[in-house]
View 1 (spheres, rainbow, N blue to C red):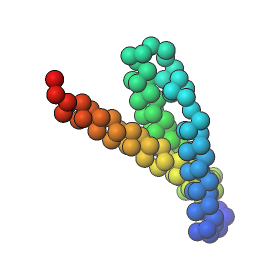
View 2 (cartoon, helix red, strand yellow):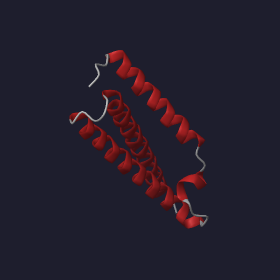
View 3 (tube, rainbow, N blue to C red):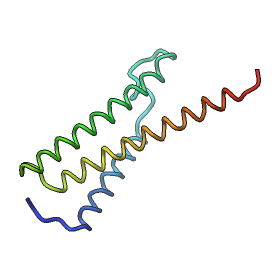
View 4 (tube, rainbow, N blue to C red):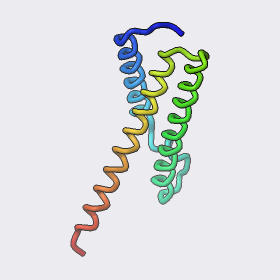
Length: 110
């Protein structure tokens, strides 16, 4: 296993975080849902985001296991974990916004 400095790990983390943000900002709503029906677009988006988060976490776990057996580099581990963390933060932020919007709707007078 190669030695890696803290600066190299931070650079790999920053590079992956920027790539994740750029990839997410380039997506269109149709990329997330795969459906053209109005009622299922949101459901498809939420389902897709959850599946993406789960896949990112599984990938990070696999790369971590590979690193323990000497099959992966520490840079790969940092990149995979950063990607999983960024994906999870995005899902949590969207969830919080949805809950906030729902609470605001409940406060509206009828």
